[in-house]
Length: 225
Figure 1: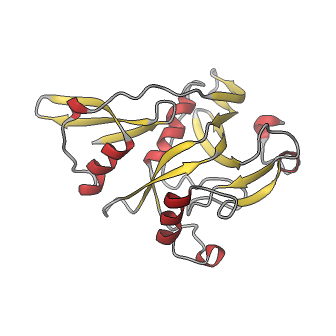
Figure 2: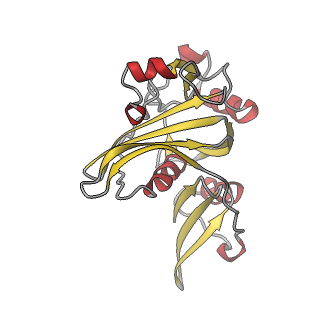
């Protein structure tokens, strides 16, 4: 079974190999969680009954992407909403959390069709201007400057619309504790994730990176420079 989160639709597209061949369905986050949390990688269920979720508005902020050479840097605004987070190693049962995200700015850097970097910044105050404070996600796979650890994931981007799929892959991929610093949050990673599920991402948990102008000066926002 393979599941990819579609942020513009608010659901997962799940493909499962059945006795009749591959079956693909759109699945709500709750339904998806019940599938994979029971037995990761060996889930079964009634795909025919999965609902279709209508798309929600999305907005590209800036894009410089050369489809000929497959290189560039694109920024994208994901509206506030409840999005899934998965935690655990591939050989263990996944823990599933639904967390409310405020507005996030996603920046994807691509060289010769290969995704070389993903940055995610949280925004609490809009509209965005040079004085708007940007925060990093309070997640165990996020660096201090907003960069996301890609780990062993090798993602590609061939056209601008692939941005949606890459954002979806982030929500579909399990997180681990590789970058987690319990001293920074004063709790374990599971306690943090439970707190995020209950309270959402707030200024109490997200860590400031700098103002929009400061991040541009520090070359953290190449899509806007």
